[in-house]
Amino acid sequence: MRDKTATLCRDCSRTAERDAAKTPCPRCHRLGYLREDTGWCGHCSRLRQTKQPPRPCRECGRVRRHAGLGLCSACWQRHPDRPFVRAESLIAELGEPPNWLRDFAADLAAKYCVSRACTMITSLGRLLLDEQPNHPQALLERSRHSGRSMGSLARALETFFTGQGMAMATDQAERLAAGRRQRRIDAVPETLRPTVDTFADFMMRSRERARRAGTRPRSDGTIEAALAIMRDLARFLADERGKQDWALTDVHDVETFLAGSPKARKRRLVVLGQFFRFARSRKIVLVDPSHGLTSRGPSGFTGATLTLDQQRVLFRRWTTGPAVHPHEALLGMLELLHGASSREVKMLQTADLDPHARTTRLGYRPHPVPLDPASWAVLERCLTHREAQRTDNPHVMVTRQTKSGRGPASTTYVSHVLDACGFPPRMIRCTRLLDLVNTMDPKLVAAAFGMDPEATMIYLADHVDEGRLPER
Image (cartoon, rainbow, N blue to C red; front, side, top):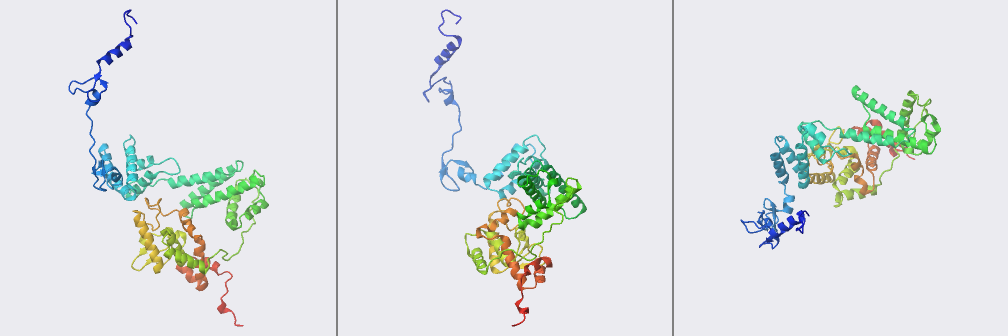
């Protein structure tokens, strides 16, 4: 302290002076500086927005504080006008709002719940308010996530922009396929991995040449299946045979590997032949160990089928079971009675249906398929389930993942639809084809189903026409 007579320092003296100037507020009874105009402290003198008193909600009638439009918070959260109000607020914030924003908000409101639509419009607003270009293609690219899923907003924007002809579709399918290929390559032992990686590049280049030539290119599933087979072979050579070089592979290794999965022998042998021919052309191996091996097996049908009692149980389940999912009943009935494949059912669209004639188009069949009353009732039940989802997807079988787009249900989903009944789709369809081929002319069945005549002949294996046998 600079003054000998002072008892407080500078800071403490100033604090003491401020405390001495405070007086109790007559409203809150706390010490403070009273304002001359109100006679209260500053906290009590500030104007505040008073809450409106609770009143009955015009939707549910409960006495609550209103959140908007005379509705309580719960009713306002699920009010169908929320996405449009949020879109109008976003338009007011933007200096130059895009002319498609209102149509996009209407598209979201028709496909998603209220809260999800509002969340997506808010996320879209953050993209529109940044300094990046806002034309549809650039906006679509910026909205994508970096992971395996590009996000619900990006999927909605892609469906809307491509449907309106405003942007090109993204390469999300190609990215996912590239990731699946890379995961299969990374699972190969390190010493054998470079050759498999080179083989994958060779298959991709061959596919591009086939596309340019107009021939039939390999699909992503075909390439991924081939890489999975090479992954399994590489693991077999490294773990069980102790071989770390493709040049050490011999015919005994290939035979032992093929014997591990007899049902997949033909497919595996085709891929192994392609790989070793490629490796021999690159001087990786000197001899093709798969050369000379055959995949001969039973030429006739050897799969499992349903008994007549099992067919009756499934028919009652899908026609009278109230707890059965409509997709299970539709797929099961079309396979059990009409021999439809899983792909024909998942690609079935509402435009293929004729309600007046009660017929439908299935796959590549040359003529419409007439549906019996039981099958038509199951189809109408599936259409009712589709209408409840409020979707613009043209397919009859619409899932939660596809209701916001226009693509068919995934192959994985369709392959597990019949898990609850305990029988795979292939067994049910083969049962119907086997019965038709053995009771009718196989050529007629092939013509009706749009199949090659040779495809139906395998179902005649071990069949004897008792009418042609001589009488004893």
